[in-house]
Length: 288
Image 1 (cartoon, rainbow, N blue to C red):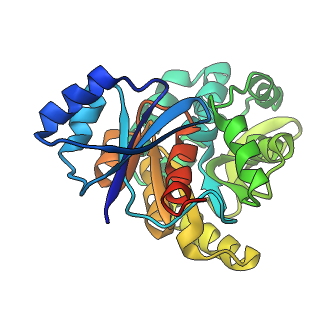
Image 2 (tube, one colour; image 1 turned 180 degrees about the vertical axis):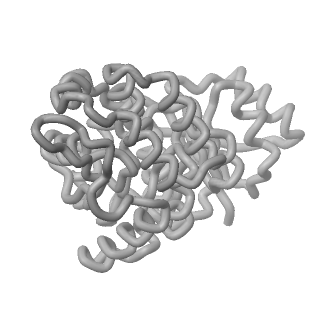
């Protein structure tokens, strides 16, 4: 049997009829439930990729249940940080305060679209911050906006024994703070070099690249004794694709076009709690 789900803050029968017309199919809703801020409908039918655009025209998310990960079984979630766990790109905000905002934002955008090598682009961006006072990091951290739905998702995952981690191409100053604030199990990111209260324009140690993120997910799964099938990677940028490909479930959240094209599952309209819609679906099929 094959299944797919549609989910949104509000699902309407009239829109569902429109969706069926566009797909040229009649669908029977097997189950419906609410989780997080979303309503979910489970449909028993072979999924067609062309239906993605039809769902998006209705501001609905849609996903085939072509993965085994499930909420009711302990798992591992590895999150990107910038524009995934939080709503901003920290380096762009730091650069604005340092007076290099426009330059850095343009490089960030190119890197996230996959047009530049991530490590090279990171070092270029950090280099523009040379001489900036360390205090600007605190200014950005004080205003750090969490992604809507993140905290609810973390609470729900913890109830079911999940392990939670951040693997970020951003900076320890923010990732370590989020680890403490949210009660995560692990965080890895890049270390900005600071001497005499000023940024030097350098990154200390190895840069957290796409492969580094993927290796982190696999290592944590082994460390925590979690089957790879019940691991989840969620991110928005090109440097998240590798960890998304090795995870049991890879999710592109409000992602760049290149990432959406390559990701198996995309969440465009739901907030972070859309992840709960995906993970709860397999529990429903198994009657749990």
